[in-house]
Image 1 (cartoon, one colour):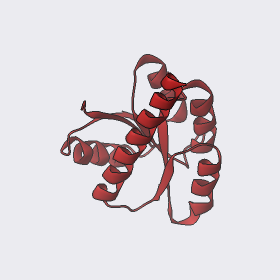
Image 2: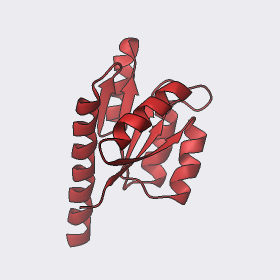
Image 3: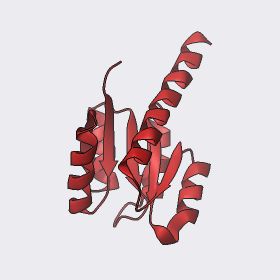
Length: 132
């Protein structure tokens, strides 16, 4: 099975470096974007399996970005990242089509489990559509 390709979207550069390093050590191909706009541009150019999307970002919020991803890139699964005070945003994201949400801080192993499940879900959905 090919390696999982993930796009992590967050406006905190240190967090992006850390998550990229930790997921890469676990055989995940990781790309990063610092904004919703940057993420959408990246998705136009490259295929990813899963987007890890922070809810709170300046400019285009994670929720706004999620809405655009659902409209334009239906094959991609999205896992919302939420801080302590924004669990409601994670639930809102699920209602808008996110596959899952995870609260910060989180364990890398928990995130990896969710990433793998999201990719598997996307594959099953693709198979059903192709066989319909």
